[in-house]
Length: 491
Ligand code: ZN
Image (cartoon, rainbow, N blue to C red; front, side, top):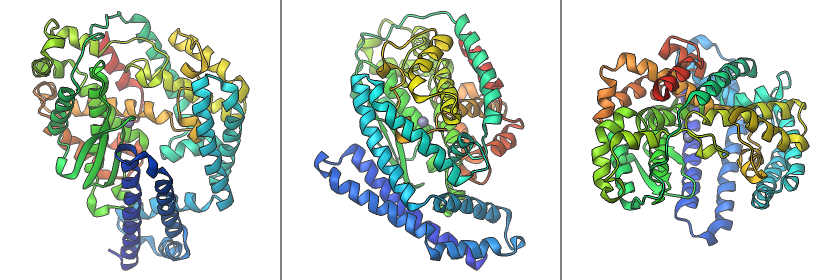
């Protein structure tokens, strides 16, 4: 490797270590930290974040980077060029925002989050409205700092899903919406046979750990704990933490969350440690990350093959709750589809309609065609049109998600992109892994994990999501594989 590039990589690795320390503090805050420590913890986290920011945007690092960017690119291999391009992209985004804007924005967000919580509890949108107006305005400003030539929403979207544009996404999502609405109308309804049954949480924990082990989650380089909101965090590919939330009355919620976070964690454990701290050792995008969690959660752990093969093991853990239910009845309950108001509780068919609603509203807010004051009515109208239900109040409607109060515009589409990527990858995997259904049925997941390692995890940010999809599946991203998968599974 070029000597100056080696120096840059060493600097990035140090920043990666610092970021990891910050993430470890956040993990602790969500799991074991005593509540009285919150004051000092916020100080610690803010200090680390500013150290990393100063290091990354300071003269020393900026000098190394511009030297390299100005040198003869023929001196570098393709992956080294790619690394430089991605570091430069991150660096440009980090230096373009004036310090005064960053501090004003972060104060606005922390205040808005606080007000949003209160507004949600009181189900009163008017409390949150002036803050959301400010957030929309500041987000437009932020986008203009990053790239004034592009529409604001495209700039924000590109933050989470590099290379993605509304010009590509809007027609894709419109076709997807038609397909989903049609499936929804044709679906038979199933009884919820699992309600009123009790599943001891220690046995739920054991089943989750068993599944993670089968997935290839490496417990010598990771662990699972409990938290109010399940999440995955990583300090290095050799230390990846997940959390879950278990409830004796909702057995599938806890299991799904373990598997979902397990999918995220497997991706992080599969990144190349040799490139730690650099873009080549980082996850490609939020959408690709979500494709990993969703694939394990929906296509594997909620598949007929899995439950046909493993229901006996599950039933033996919960003899009292499940003695009168066979695997087919259980599977139908697991895959029950019913339009509901809350996104995070939605089934796999209706989930994306929740996302499409937010996507359409966000674009309208950002380009000014929808006023924030008209947002609750627009929200309700779309729920009526797409899902046939109407929120009785704002807390079950427009105020349900935390994202907008954090200034996260352009983030929601990555959830649906994750589902579309997952379907397309899974279709390809089916062609390439002999007897994939048999493997899933026997819970022998090693061929799946190694396929994901080889095709997706090890790539890091070495490609854009669109390039990855094309290279792995031979096709550009579309809704086709996902709609075909839903039709096969549900109709
Ligand atoms: Zn996720």
